[in-house]
Length: 568
Image (cartoon, rainbow, N blue to C red; front, top):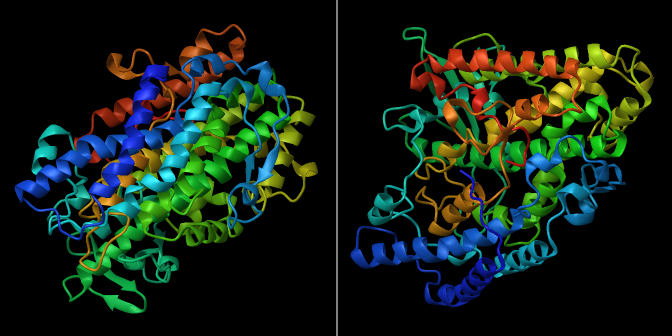
């Protein structure tokens, strides 16, 4: 879910006034340890917070992502000549101390993506207010045994996300998330035993602030030969092994799911997808490819708003000790940055290519037992085919100098380089087939992979009794950390721009890449034909998915829902 707000001056004035009043609300509703239960006074108090305080804090988060309404995505296609001006990569350490020198952001962002002066100023005000109004630190009440972060009154007034099938009462949650759904893309097939494992033990010794407990662990899942279904075999946490049904297993399961939540959002989503994948691609594109270059024309919708959104949103996530990530994870900001730094240093770009990732993990890409793995692999092959056909048409004379510069920029700004993705050692070895694999991987990362880790995870991350971001000794989260996570999911972005036209008349005001290709005179007939062929493959794939039962579709990549870049 995304919220788009009107950035008119009166609306901003009202909201700023409301935010300032939150200081008094914070004093009035300080850190109480009373659990949320059915008591009328507590329910009313919780409802008041949800109706007033939570929207105000959410607005703080939204301000960081607000763009001037004149900067609609349709104005960014075809590539804007204003964006051919210099874009300067800077090391992430210059902006966020402790994250290291191995990743890059940009000193500025494309002129066509600039916000208005007023929007920038108000966004900065919201960012500063966020330092003192953070819910994660100001509210430590724990939930009752249900772990549900809202009163029954609130539940009636606001639609809650659909509960994932694997989080139903009779489901084996760990076996579910390791075999299907958005988190199953991280699962490793252990060749010696045939077990499926997911190792999050790096989180075991990350000490959160009081009152939270460490989380992490190694989950192991096996296939029951009698039934053919998967079941959890064990969870190991901090050297202790817990078997299903044994004393301490439910807490071990909760610790593991909390760590998976934070790995998916902090590492896979923010670090891998936003920074090391999409940001690097946007920087290299703007630095190396002129606005009329054939690769720039193809790449534009996949990088739209990437640089400006990263410049604006990451501040709200990790800039201060009370920013969004330390607020909802319970981890200290230095530990958050240190974790990012270690992942960046060890980064292998082949992880962004799903076919190579699954090969490294020993996961089959044609097995119906792993529907999300199979689906992401299927769609990636379509992206790869698009890239190969595009370059076959527009790179008939070999790799041009602009493309070489583009790939060289990626090599310099990707931790451990981009060359391992295609198995070369120098730019002199670069061939069109290598370029095709590189651009397919990066287009896929900014669109499909981001869709998987952003949109497909939402219902899991909002099922707070199963997969919160931080827990106390009782195994449940606090109200403050839950609301901080909700803010990070609901907070505003800009206009959605889809890979495919919306089906059944949905989102008539939304643009798709195909709409733009077909209605733009700067797109050649050859380019249009290649895109249309790709589009038809995706539509056919979507139609096949639509014939399937809902409990099957839930775990597949539906191309109609894919937005083109991380701006959405």
